[in-house]
Length: 90
Image (spheres, rainbow, N blue to C red):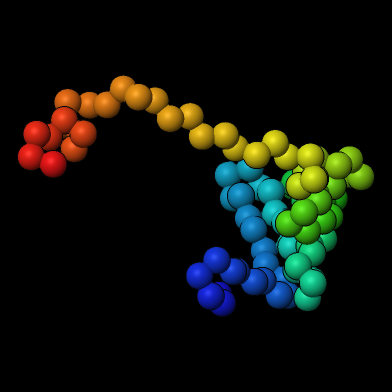
């Protein structure tokens, strides 16, 4: 881990779901990408490839950061009676 908001993986990491007998050996590239297969009962069921900006599963694009709508914050004027806004000494 480097800095406050950066996390970097390099090499191979294995994820295992024992209950469903699913495994994935993820190979992280030096440039932030990943490429792996998902196996269930030792049979290949899916191929995942991408990076933090684009993810394809079995060749189908499931995530592309260019088309993600930004989160819009909703601020409500209703406050709880315990809110500092109701204090008379402030």
